[in-house]
Length: 138
Image (cartoon, rainbow, N blue to C red; front, side):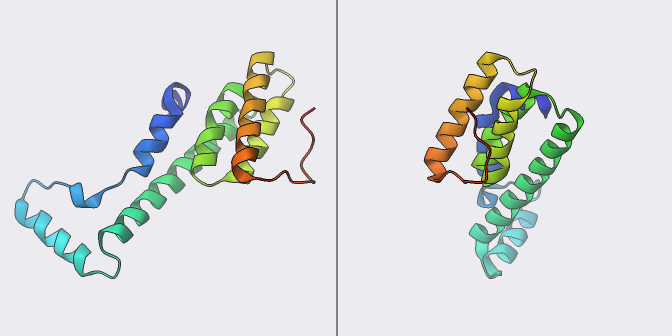
Protein backbone atom coordinates (compact mmCIF):
# COMPACT_ATOMS: atom_id res chain seq x y z
CA UNK A 1 0.00 0.00 0.00
CA UNK A 2 2.79 2.38 0.91
CA UNK A 3 4.44 1.80 -2.48
CA UNK A 4 1.16 2.55 -4.26
CA UNK A 5 0.82 5.82 -2.34
CA UNK A 6 4.29 6.92 -3.38
CA UNK A 7 4.11 5.71 -6.97
CA UNK A 8 0.68 6.78 -8.14
CA UNK A 9 -1.82 8.15 -5.65
CA UNK A 10 -4.07 9.31 -8.52
CA UNK A 11 -4.42 5.73 -9.73
CA UNK A 12 -5.24 4.66 -6.19
CA UNK A 13 -7.98 7.27 -5.96
CA UNK A 14 -9.40 6.09 -9.30
CA UNK A 15 -9.40 2.41 -8.31
CA UNK A 16 -11.13 3.14 -5.01
CA UNK A 17 -13.69 5.35 -6.76
CA UNK A 18 -14.59 3.18 -9.74
CA UNK A 19 -16.86 0.56 -8.20
CA UNK A 20 -19.39 -1.06 -10.51
CA UNK A 21 -21.16 -4.05 -8.99
CA UNK A 22 -23.19 -4.44 -12.17
CA UNK A 23 -19.94 -5.48 -13.90
CA UNK A 24 -19.16 -8.23 -11.38
CA UNK A 25 -18.69 -11.79 -12.50
CA UNK A 26 -19.29 -15.11 -10.79
CA UNK A 27 -18.00 -18.58 -11.49
CA UNK A 28 -21.56 -19.87 -11.50
CA UNK A 29 -23.92 -17.80 -13.67
CA UNK A 30 -26.92 -18.65 -11.44
CA UNK A 31 -25.12 -17.17 -8.43
CA UNK A 32 -24.50 -13.94 -10.31
CA UNK A 33 -28.13 -13.75 -11.43
CA UNK A 34 -29.38 -14.41 -7.90
CA UNK A 35 -27.11 -11.72 -6.42
CA UNK A 36 -28.10 -9.24 -9.12
CA UNK A 37 -31.79 -9.94 -8.49
CA UNK A 38 -31.31 -9.23 -4.79
CA UNK A 39 -29.49 -5.98 -5.58
CA UNK A 40 -32.14 -4.89 -8.07
CA UNK A 41 -34.96 -5.63 -5.62
CA UNK A 42 -33.28 -3.71 -2.80
CA UNK A 43 -34.14 -0.08 -2.20
CA UNK A 44 -31.23 1.57 -3.96
CA UNK A 45 -30.22 -0.97 -6.56
CA UNK A 46 -26.74 -0.98 -8.03
CA UNK A 47 -26.07 2.71 -7.38
CA UNK A 48 -26.65 2.19 -3.66
CA UNK A 49 -24.46 -0.93 -3.54
CA UNK A 50 -21.72 0.81 -5.52
CA UNK A 51 -21.80 3.79 -3.17
CA UNK A 52 -21.66 1.59 -0.06
CA UNK A 53 -18.75 -0.48 -1.38
CA UNK A 54 -16.87 2.65 -2.47
CA UNK A 55 -17.40 4.32 0.90
CA UNK A 56 -16.30 1.17 2.73
CA UNK A 57 -13.13 0.85 0.64
CA UNK A 58 -12.31 4.52 1.13
CA UNK A 59 -12.86 4.35 4.89
CA UNK A 60 -10.64 1.25 5.11
CA UNK A 61 -7.96 2.90 3.01
CA UNK A 62 -7.97 6.13 5.02
CA UNK A 63 -7.75 4.12 8.26
CA UNK A 64 -4.66 2.31 6.91
CA UNK A 65 -3.20 5.57 5.66
CA UNK A 66 -3.63 7.20 9.07
CA UNK A 67 -1.92 4.21 10.65
CA UNK A 68 1.06 4.62 8.31
CA UNK A 69 1.22 8.33 9.07
CA UNK A 70 1.13 7.61 12.81
CA UNK A 71 4.08 5.23 12.42
CA UNK A 72 6.04 7.80 10.41
CA UNK A 73 4.91 11.17 11.78
CA UNK A 74 7.95 13.05 10.45
CA UNK A 75 7.90 11.60 6.92
CA UNK A 76 7.32 14.56 4.64
CA UNK A 77 7.36 12.25 1.59
CA UNK A 78 4.52 10.13 2.99
CA UNK A 79 2.60 13.20 4.13
CA UNK A 80 2.98 14.80 0.72
CA UNK A 81 1.88 11.65 -1.12
CA UNK A 82 -1.10 11.16 1.22
CA UNK A 83 -2.48 14.68 1.00
CA UNK A 84 -4.11 14.43 -2.47
CA UNK A 85 -5.72 11.09 -1.58
CA UNK A 86 -7.29 12.46 1.58
CA UNK A 87 -8.45 15.54 -0.30
CA UNK A 88 -9.96 13.49 -3.15
CA UNK A 89 -11.86 11.33 -0.66
CA UNK A 90 -13.41 14.36 1.03
CA UNK A 91 -11.19 14.62 4.10
CA UNK A 92 -10.50 18.27 3.26
CA UNK A 93 -9.42 19.64 6.62
CA UNK A 94 -7.23 16.62 7.34
CA UNK A 95 -5.54 16.98 3.94
CA UNK A 96 -4.96 20.69 4.52
CA UNK A 97 -3.53 20.05 8.00
CA UNK A 98 -1.23 17.35 6.64
CA UNK A 99 0.10 19.58 3.85
CA UNK A 100 0.64 22.37 6.39
CA UNK A 101 2.46 19.93 8.66
CA UNK A 102 4.66 18.93 5.73
CA UNK A 103 5.60 22.55 5.15
CA UNK A 104 6.49 22.94 8.81
CA UNK A 105 8.51 19.70 9.27
CA UNK A 106 12.06 20.79 10.11
CA UNK A 107 13.47 18.01 7.94
CA UNK A 108 11.35 18.79 4.86
CA UNK A 109 13.46 19.68 1.84
CA UNK A 110 12.78 22.90 -0.01
CA UNK A 111 11.45 20.91 -3.00
CA UNK A 112 8.90 19.13 -0.76
CA UNK A 113 7.97 22.44 0.87
CA UNK A 114 7.29 23.95 -2.56
CA UNK A 115 5.21 20.94 -3.54
CA UNK A 116 3.25 21.11 -0.27
CA UNK A 117 2.62 24.83 -0.81
CA UNK A 118 1.36 24.09 -4.33
CA UNK A 119 -0.96 21.43 -2.88
CA UNK A 120 -2.22 23.89 -0.28
CA UNK A 121 -2.85 26.49 -2.95
CA UNK A 122 -4.73 24.01 -5.11
CA UNK A 123 -6.80 22.69 -2.21
CA UNK A 124 -7.74 26.16 -0.99
CA UNK A 125 -8.65 27.17 -4.52
CA UNK A 126 -10.88 24.10 -4.79
CA UNK A 127 -12.33 24.51 -1.32
CA UNK A 128 -12.72 28.25 -1.76
CA UNK A 129 -11.71 29.40 1.70
CA UNK A 130 -8.90 29.96 4.13
CA UNK A 131 -9.71 29.28 7.77
CA UNK A 132 -8.63 32.12 10.00
CA UNK A 133 -7.61 29.72 12.79
CA UNK A 134 -5.17 27.86 10.51
CA UNK A 135 -1.51 28.79 10.96
CA UNK A 136 0.14 30.79 8.23
CA UNK A 137 2.49 28.98 5.87
CA UNK A 138 4.75 31.98 5.33
